Image 1 (cartoon, rainbow, N blue to C red):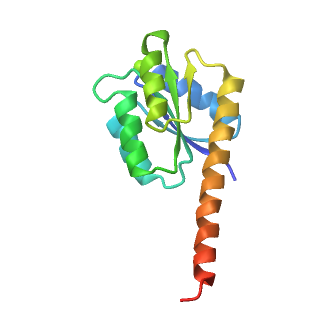
Image 2 (cartoon, helix red, strand yellow; image 1 turned 180 degrees about the vertical axis):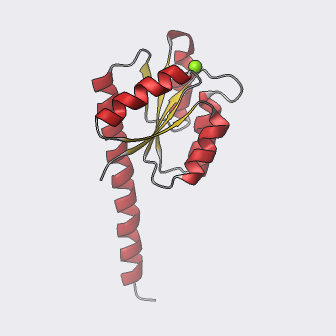
Image 3 (cartoon, rainbow, N blue to C red; image 1 turned 45 degrees about the horizontal axis):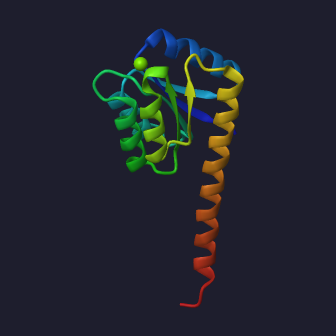
Length: 141
Ligand SMILES: [Mg+2]
């Protein structure tokens, strides 16, 4: 099944260009140009697997967006996109649960590798939960 990616960046030409490239590579892409809009889209789309989020955005920045995404949907994996000026914020983001960060302009192959890694981690986590529920069912009551 196709991996669904939520792409968040305040620069809409960047979002459109990256979305196009990801679509070409077979991903399902949901786009957003702000944190609040991204949170709405996350609620509307239960199929979102991986979030790619810009760190530097006006209003709600990428770190606050990450924090809210993780509290809303802890199982979704987040990859941060950062420039040199916000690398420290990106590292702080990893403390808050981001899987990794990539420097802008991001290398497409590296980004795709990270998306697959994120999806793998999410699936493994979901399988573990499913397995735990099966084991719980089998326990004597
Ligand atoms: Mg930005």
